[in-house]
Length: 609
Image 1 (spheres, rainbow, N blue to C red):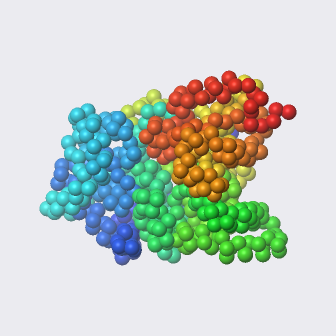
Image 2 (cartoon, one colour):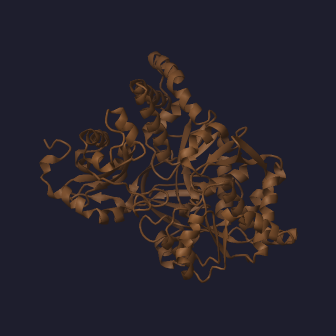
Image 3 (tube, rainbow, N blue to C red):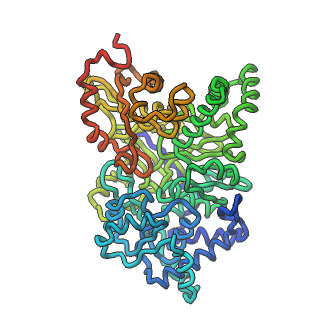
């Protein structure tokens, strides 16, 4: 059994809870800008001391409203400054937040509120209230529903004016490290969401150790980040707490359509993103260049960027010709992309899905080091991450300090350490199944290590397909590169117990009109018509061929079907973090799958000879 365990570099403090991170930040740098909020066309800074004062005032409001220590409060809202304000106010009041994705359906909201036993619920918008109202009668435990759009923060702050500071200080000190900090429900890609019991120590110890490990990222002069990933997800939630601990100035932009203008005005030094964001940045730039008649230049620049970065990583000398090309493209292409991201981005932390080495190398040559990491809700987000001073593109890095990672006999990744959750809420059977002897959490992911302990993710254990010929196939190895194509939305590889591998493909409705226009086709073509269009099919075929070039013939996709629709969270086919619900898709599109395998194999997309 291969195992890498990294000792913690910060002594553990079993008495500490998350509120201590803010208290210590204020003691160190009371006048440091800890947040910036949109104001006019710019941003207004909020200092650490101002943030703490707002947190205490709102915590008093929760106390005045009758919230008791240990009580759970559901929270549905977008990623804004107010999200973190409420998060810390609940910590200070001694309560436990249960975040709910802003896109959750009424039945999902009902399940999480029921299962958690939450007695209060905070909502951001009238739309959220309408969804909750559908199931309100099924939630007898809920005493209070607070609505942010109706001035809830100001109202509660005013109500709490007479609560003593001493009461807030008493409440914020009740929780010890081993106590429940938050209950975060899994996204439900493999069934009903399970509540993960994450403790104060999970966040405190991981924040303190990660801050040391990622010192170059979070402690660089003027360190700042713009959050746009939902803070209901553990990835952004952890980063928001890490930023408070490290003194990183944080801004928020919940509307991803306004992301580029926000980046331009906020000018962050590092970003937190999922691979789909980097794919969109690249694809949008490529299609924009194509529309301006400069597509050939862009693709040459991209190829030079990837080659340049690969040679650097391998420690090889850069040929003079490439040096000249690189310098030219830096002025023509790379500098414009850097400016589009704000001009100051040095690092980007990527998680949730594999990035792919091509994009990693491309952004590296732009001057943006993408530190790909790996983790789950059950590991409080990161278990491994590439480091600023040593990263390997294509891997998810080594274990963080205080974390151990090992591979089982079947290649399954197991994790234990300061970041691993306590248990599944009210689900001892699932908890017992999730842990092996010695406190190792079974992730369900398959991976491999290199000699230095850098981890590479190769797939999900439950998703490994076995063809009729006995060939094991990891779908992600084919799906991820195909999905990087500008017109592809999602891909699901099929072939378990089948004679060959095939795929279901959906188109990206955002990118499709630009691509169609660039290729002399009507930009307003419907998804149904595009799915049957020869040029569109040829473009998807190119993406499939590129993915097939990295696997053996037995693992290659022989046939694909383009569906005349999109998979969305609303359709029930994606989780809130945009992961595919493979089992649901397989059931809902069984007719299309049967059709693929019932047609003659002479129509396969790769030669049979």
